Amino acid sequence: MGVGIIGTGYYVPSRILSNKELESMVDTTDEWIFSKVGVRERRIAEPHEATSDLAILAAQDALRNAGVTPEEIDLIILATSSPDMIQPATAAIVQGKLGALNSAAFDVSAVCAGFVYALTVAQAMMKANTQYRRSLVIGAETYSRILDWSDRSTCVYFGDGAGAVVLGRQPGTLGIHTTYLKNDGRGATAIRYQGGGSRHPASAETLAKNLHRFEMNGKAVWDFASKACPMSIRKVIADAGLKLSDIDMVITHQANINIIRSSLEELGIPMEKTYTTIEKYANTAGASIPITLAEAHQKGLLKKGDKVVLVGFGGGLSLGAVYLEWGLDHPGSKRLLKRQRAKLDNHSLN
Ligand SMILES: CC(C)(COP(=O)(O)OP(=O)(O)OC[C@H]1O[C@@H](n2cnc3c(N)ncnc32)[C@H](O)[C@@H]1OP(=O)(O)O)[C@@H](O)C(=O)NCCC(=O)NCCS
Image (cartoon, rainbow, N blue to C red; front, top):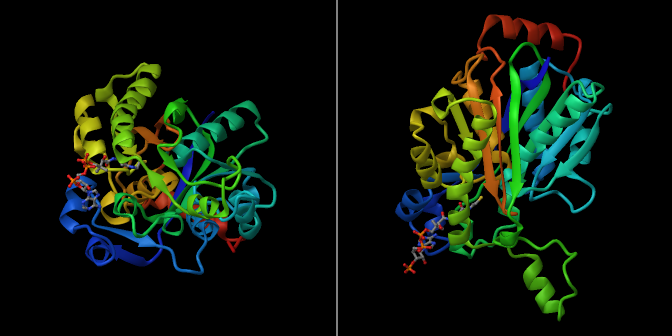
């Protein structure tokens, strides 16, 4: 039996912030943002919504989709770079509120490649130890809380949201086949937000200024990402003994539509073989891959046996990809709905 995705889910806050609205906040235009980045609008969490709240709603959606109860989860790994708190892990808050009390829970910090890192760690733990039968892997972010809304070189890119998958055992060749993780720490501070443990600041003003400022060197990130994305896809496909033309679907981190286009073009993969959400949700960092995957799945764009690549890249500078054979029926299939209903008959999710 392999380890694969047995359910997907996502949640995005209902409040929409359009490029048009942003025009009244910073010196930018809808035309610049759409042509340079591919974003038209993004979602913004309500004041009462924390990263963990978004994560819980995405997790509940994924559990429902998988027909699995919170008590059946053995492991929760949550990827975030905008956690509720520096300590405890956001995964711990999610675990308690979800009632997944039989599980281990921890966060993974690998920024926009965080979900691919978390998925790889969960799969490796499940392969190494059969006591981990079902895992919940979540990506959740509230960048609206850490962005400097007066800085047009960063605030126009990002949005809030959460996505999740449930991992379980799958028969035959279904499930995760190859994974690849890497980091280039020479660019570790190209994207940054201080957490309080850096060197002692010269003054209280320096500390206050640095602690609450998200910074990004857009050009450096572009140069890195436009190489990291195609390279990571090539690597997991080659390791699986496949050709790029064998791929049915690529879900990339939703950083910039032009990075996605140029990467796929370089690999000779047509844009029809990807699905994007950047236009409506912007860059949701560690959440963008599971949100996009869940939406593609729930729209019925994936079918059992499809060869799927997930690829992430971003702060760290982190990169990675996962190649898997999709193991789920179409979400509307009668067999799946019947199984989910039967399973949930005696359980209610919080
Ligand atoms: C940021 C990025 C779009 C820059 O593209 P570029 O073509 O090199 O553009 P430049 O930085 O040279 O900026 C072009 C002009 O637009 C201006 N500009 C920057 N941000 C702007 C904004 N939000 N609105 C309007 N104009 C803006 C610049 O000031 C510059 O003006 P100038 O020519 O008068 O100096 C590109 O580097 C990028 O997308 N990087 C990756 C960022 C990313 O994906 N981050 C997430 C990683 S996970």
